[in-house]
Image (cartoon, rainbow, N blue to C red):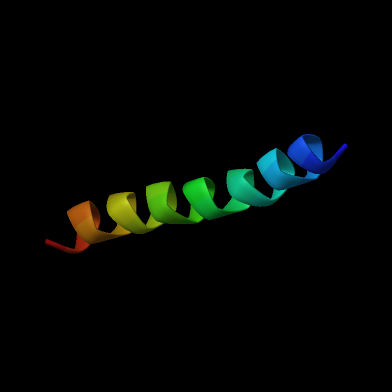
Length: 28
């Protein structure tokens, strides 16, 4: 249960970094 909740909390973070990377690529 703890591992599952940890993975769930990690997914939004990785998605945020992924979107930020795309945003930076588009802005430059």
